[in-house]
Each structure stands twice: as C-alpha cells, then as structure tokens.
Amino acid sequence: MQRSAELRIEAGIKNKSTPENLQIHYLADKPHLLPQLTDLFIAEWEPYYGNNGPGNAENDLRGSMNREQLPVCFIALGNETLLGTISLKEKSISHNPELTPWCAALLVVPEMRRRGIGSALVSALEREARRRDYRELYMSTDTANSIAEARGWKAIGSAESMRGIVTVYKLSLGMERF
Image (cartoon, rainbow, N blue to C red; front, side):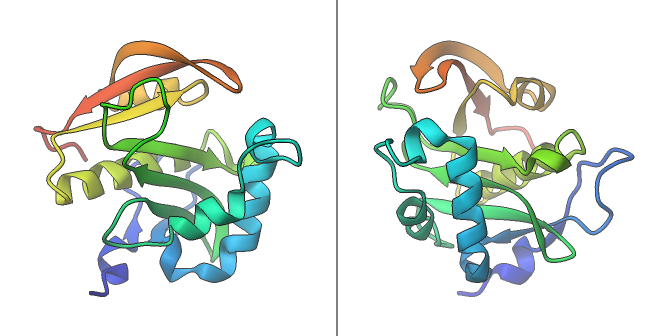
C-alpha cells in the first residue's frame, strides 16, 4: 500500500522562520538520504552511535525504513534537503519496557533548529499514531521538553540515558490536536 502522498504533508505547525515548503515523508520513500541521516545520528548521539558506542546508526535506520510496521522513520524536507527526523517505535528506553509506543529519535539539523521543524515532526508522528489507533504515546527527551509540553504531553517521570537524565512524557491520543 503506497501512502507517501498522504504523508507528504505541509507542516501544520509554523512560526515565521519555518521553511514554507516543509514536508514530512517516510524515510522508506527517500532511501537516498540514508547516508546523510546516518551521519546526523552519529554526530548527535556519538556516545551511542560513535566508534566506541554500542549502536549502529545505519542498521537502526535501515530497520526503520517501513511504512506499516514499527519502527517507522519520518523525515522533514525543505526543497529536498534533509531538515530533521523522528521515529515511531515499539520500545525506546529500557527503563520502562511496559510503555509503548514511543516517539523517538527526534532530531533537527543544528542550523535549522528553533524554526518549528521539530514541532511539525512531532505533530506528524502524533497523527500517525492516531491513524494506527494507539491510545497513548511516550517520549523521553533532554532537549525537546518545550515542544512536548506545548503540544500537551505530560511529564510522568525521568530516566537515565547515555547523555544523562531525560524526562519521560506521555500523550493521551483521545483528543485530536492539529
């Protein structure tokens, strides 16, 4: 089932510096961006994906090149330039294995941060979770707290990550948010 036209959306969350042509796609529809996204993951999460870390960014991203099964990775583009990414995953942090699914790997390229791209990615992921009939969604972050809180996510605790303490959030998906 091809759903890229449905997902290729104009970002509904904008501020005056949000790129006008911001679109969200499945990574599966833009596989040529995998090397660039891999480099971005390694740079952002070096303790995990770097040379001495336990993770493999390329393998994780390849495993997220899905449309209908989890994990699924979304990317934000402006003029076909990679601006950011987010994933919907069954599991994320190991401290709370009973919580599922997760908004994970929210990342905006450094020079494009604070322009509404992260909010647009979270909004797209929330819509996708609703489409899949999930009742709740979880996120852990040490950098996107303002995005989560502005979108109605509630802090439910904290956890230790390789970068330090992160806040764990929950979003109840009963109400539609745009």
